[in-house]
Every structure is written in C-alpha cells, then in structure tokens.
Image (cartoon, rainbow, N blue to C red; front, top):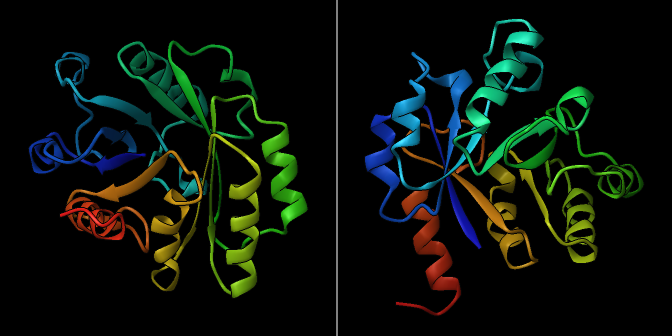
Length: 203
C-alpha cells in the first residue's frame, strides 16, 4: 500500500513528505509549472499528471503540448498518469504508466469496467467514477476482488470511504491531498494515514 499525495505547488512537498510514499505532481493545477531540476531533486517517488479540462483538470493547451509535457517529465518520474483513450503515448514514456479512466457523471456497469481493465496497456489501471448507489460500491468491490494492479474508488463526499476500502481489497495506492482537495471525497494525507493505522490496529 502506497499513500499518494496530490500536490499543486512545491510548497506542498514539505507538508506531506513525512507520511506520503509518492507525490503526484498535478502539473495542470500548478500556478507555475516547476522546472525539471526542481522536480528531479525531490527524492520521493513521483507521478506526473497533466489533466485536461474534459478529464477534470485545468490544462488549457493543445493535446500535442500536453503529451510533450508528460513525456518530458516522465524522464524524472516513476509513473505518469495517462488517460485510457490516449493511444499514441502509451509506448513512448520513460517510466511506468498508470492508465486512468474518470467518469464524473456515473459509475458504468461491471462489464464496461471489466473490458477496460482486460485491455489495459499500462502497468496499473485507475478507475475513478462518481458514486451514486450501493450498486456502484459493489461494482468496484467486484473489480478490485478479481484484478491485481487496479486502483479503484468512487468520487463524492458520501463515498469517500471507498478510497480507504479499496486498500483492503488490494488497491496499491490511495490518493490524498496536501491541504487543498483536488477531487471530492479526497482525504488529507495525514488524516488518511491515521485512519489506515487505526484500521490495522496500529498505534
């Protein structure tokens, strides 16, 4: 289990480095994109994410610029997060790939998600969908129970518990924030750390 802290500034690094195993650089949310050297010198494992507006991000450049940014920073990262429908970049990265699917309107049925995972090209597959019902929870439980290397949770405050639940069903990562949430239902990194410790019976 790895705790991922989504950061939106270099100042966030010092806030979370005591408990976060991995830093997700949400470059689309940075007020000013950090220099390569600034990212390279940070010793924590890194995920590079540049999310476009259609996928819940704020990157306003064109797709060629976005993919170029991902590739450039992938040379100094452990992972890049690439959308599942972004075909041309999957075999052009210098690190491992988290292939991601986001749905801000609903949670598709099991068969739809199963097909996505069965056809994954990345090292991990990430599913983040809007939760609306108990059936949505059961769909994710089934996916997590049947597959390895899948990160899956429901978005929304009401379904924040699925982020913790997923860890106990084999999800390798939990995504948290460093003080400013980048998604509804996301836990602050220290809060998540304490919850996980208690559930494991640790002091």
